Length: 203
Image (cartoon, rainbow, N blue to C red; front, side, top):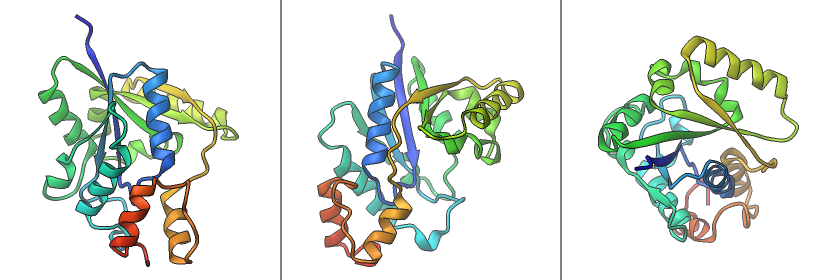
């Protein structure tokens, strides 16, 4: 019996945007994933909490964003967990629940250079394969060195997702909203409606 292949899209999703969805879809297609599980962080300990929307609101925005894709699923496990959100704890819980599945953690290439600062990075690399998005124009040599270091130091399995530069970030979206600028086609319409209704990000 073939093992189930589950992609994991973790993140603050503050707010979730088209770049997240495109990355998840590209990873699913490139690596034949059965599903992609979106897991909004509850308390992202590496972020400035003053800039982060309420965790249940970020969860709801993620739900609205993925509602029309049957291969995308939502998990509230980090939102419901007390204290800081650590990826290694999330992966451990998922592996216990889905013992017959293989997990693929989907990340932007910039995350490759941050992962060593995560809590228990050796556990993260032991629990899953890392799928790193390689965007056009990025320093490929620097990325290859980063991946090589993780392979040597942690025996990490890192694979690259080839994809076009998206050029959308949650920070830019928040800044545009604060200035009263449009984020149409950058954020799914249901998410924009939710942001407007709840007066998030300075609206």
